[in-house]
Amino acid sequence: MPDTLIAGICPARNLPLYTLNGEHFRRFAGLEVHELRPTTVEQP
Image (cartoon, rainbow, N blue to C red; front, side):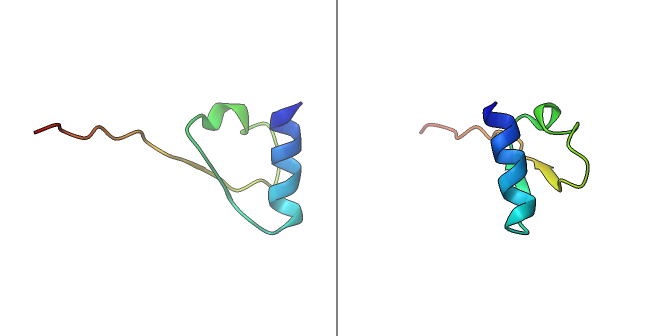
C-alpha cells in the first residue's frame, strides 16, 4: 500500500520520484522514476 500511495502522489503533484529501490515503482505507468545510488563516505 505505501508504494501505491507514493506513486499516486508524485504524478498528482507533477513530481518525479527519487528512490533507492526503483523496482518497487517500475510497474506504475507514467511515473518518472529516478533510482539513486547509495554512496559511501570514507572515514579519516
